[in-house]
Image 1 (cartoon, one colour):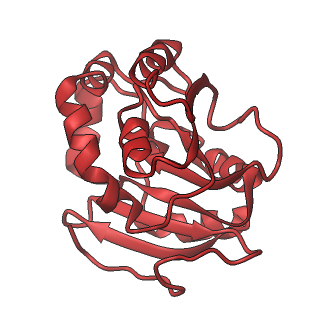
Image 2: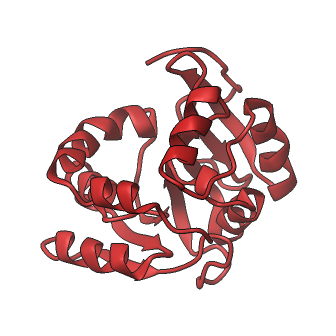
Length: 210
């Protein structure tokens, strides 16, 4: 799994990103009830994990990232949260048993995984029946491609119509697919059939919103 560029890694560890992350949690999770055993894949320096822990203090959160430097930074950031841990892991080969988590979170990282479909499949594998895969990511656009080429960040930008079929193949049912920022970002909630959890809606929604 590719690592962040030096520029992205520096921003990910910065104080401004930590402040932004706290404000982004409600938008990123779309009101989904984050409870129980939670896994964040590709969590970088742990800014979003810390924000999730603050917003949902009862969750047992495991944050993973492929980059050991990011994991070390996350461990330092999350030291004051006893129910949160940071581990090194490749999102396409997660070191967890089947059906280990109630919710999987992915914030702006799938496009960094060249074989991002494998990351979705792995998320579905470790997700318990009735659980959900929740997050947001960049979509293919000239601007996004230009930015990643400029900072030499490994990426594979995703077309919006690709999400539904990949979720279906992984055994996940999309509950919400929402386009934001002029179609440059997609927010998603995908449900693993089984014991129902409370979720914000049961129909696929596709709309542009901030």
